[in-house]
Image 1 (spheres, rainbow, N blue to C red):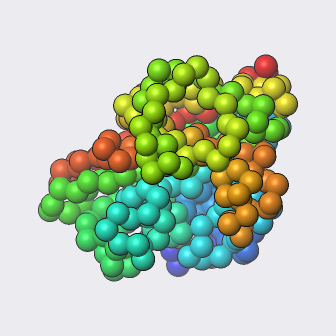
Image 2 (tube, rainbow, N blue to C red):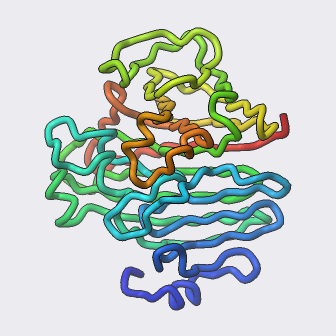
Image 3 (cartoon, rainbow, N blue to C red):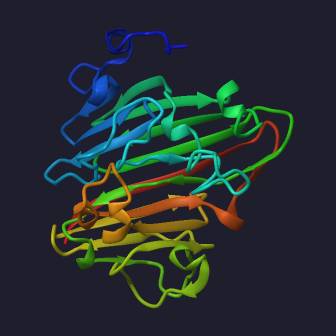
Length: 303
């Protein structure tokens, strides 16, 4: 509906004076910029991707690479990309884009609303001829993000076709940290996980997670609230989720960062990905006409 509108026309149609505007972002891409007494934030129509959230009185919470690329068809490194309908590589097609195709699509802006000091931004995308080249099903996605003292994310998948389908999904949140080695992640003690750096070998978490090497772990059958404790930035990031049965913790470490052209050689030290997800054996089965909503809430407190 709004794909044909210019950035100025989108701003005229959706802006809330003193709270939210549609502006020209990096690479000339349209961006919703939120500024309220509670928080500042940014969300691009490219991938419906949050790239910034800064509650009042705090430092930036979301990591964004200084080398991120801002081009149509290319994923933005950092922020909170949306992975759908598969996670990592597509199992039956190595040519398919990693983490699916919606994070590199231009989404449509559906609404910007304000309630008190919170601003909610909703964007949508749906199946088309391009997506059907990779995945033959009809779907609609709605991503609703509320910027305030907390960051609330809701990703709703609707099966618009006549056949059931199975999909993986993730809100691939990059959290900004002072120094990744000094971060502890609590809430997963005793949980089984698959270590993707060792061909998905199954292990059990003992105590808090401390990231001391290349890490790509999928924690299984867990819906628990997590806390990311950052002694360098003196803050606690709380991550709660709903309708998510896996949690991914990822950091490429030094060797992995070198293979990523859109990540600075040392930037891996300032990021820790903790992702609400449904992947692998916990992929979601969705019948025709049904919908599924994945939610994640992020909050910050002083440590």
